[in-house]
Image (cartoon, rainbow, N blue to C red):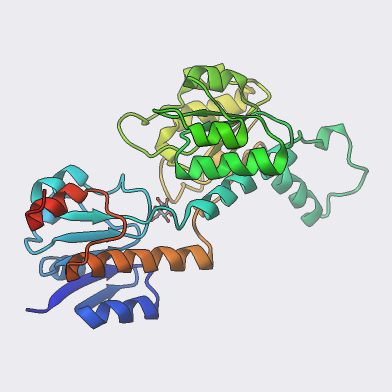
Length: 330
Ligand code: 8YV
């Protein structure tokens, strides 16, 4: 029996062709209300599911008895039902590493933009409002030399820390569940408890995965610990932050500014105050959205799915124990 694969979003012709060599592929360029029935029917026959922004829940898994591999084109997998997949012996693969540097670039773009008020001041030029010399009311704050606080010094957090320390001479503080000796040795980074980091950093940058432990990690109390001159940058997940509390803190000057690539709800509703506040730079979840990186992510996701179905094994799985169980290895 041939493999059957359902592919959703973000796959190039070349990557679809690679999948077609080992399987019958049904590709959905996007999922809409109109093709949902068709997608569910395809899923009910599929052995593999691959794509970006996959929508999957336990009920859908129950209707997909043949499914054995899910390959998400993202590093984060908070949108997928991992516990249910573990119970059903379904392998989950994701795309770490290949998007680390692009996402760190995005974080730095937001750092630069919020510190130097780039969007606000570029709009002034664009709208023909550059009439007098730029004075104090338009000044930003420096990036170089400021203390950078990395909340979650994993792959992406470490890449942000390197940019700050090596490119901008920033002292780096970080939180992590275990010390990172390589960051301390190469960058002079220092580990802190979250509360201390929040109080000491000029720029607080969030790069933690989203889960029950990080839900609303940055709430009103956390924001109150930050310096009133500080900026918050989020390239993790919107719900790591209590968004109403952040809006309130930005409006009342509890913190100075925020650079946000992720939101509690995406797409962010157009009437959110975050869309129009002068001290907010908001981007539409572009962390990994470059031609090069999205292609590398799709390629890795295809490698993972093909490797898993063909028995060679995936390159980057989340729940490898499922695989060992399925193949009888220990
Ligand atoms: C994805 C991301 O584009 O990889 C991630 O976790 O946040 C982005 O690269 C996003 O998850 C949508 O699939």
